[in-house]
Image 1 (spheres, rainbow, N blue to C red):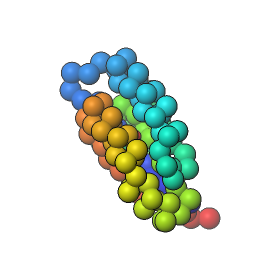
Image 2: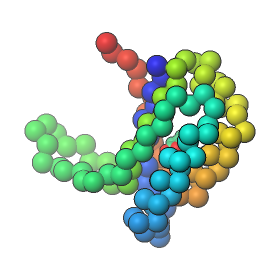
Image 3: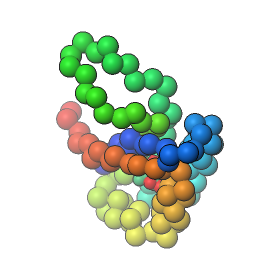
Image 4: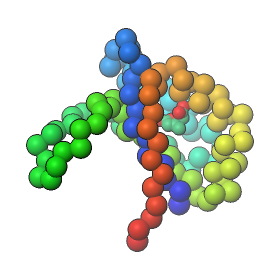
Length: 107
Ligand code: 3ML
């Protein structure tokens, strides 16, 4: 399974309420995107800095999302799809900044 994690920052001037609404729309749209096995988006509820190891001071972020793909072929199919392109167009309207993280299975 290919899994990509995204850290999302809302655009300057967008309220957290509007951002949350658009995240919900984006989630609903994800169900029509071909070859996307699963999409999840969660709002950031806190970023505590009192960690037991040195704190990594990045952010703040407004949401964390993840995309799942069953194979690299499915990922290519997703990239090529027009519905995926429309989904990204919606993304451009409410994602101010995006940090993608490609993750790899360990076990
Ligand atoms: C890539 C993505 C990360 C996310 O939260 O949604 C998708 C599509 C997009 O960026 O519009």
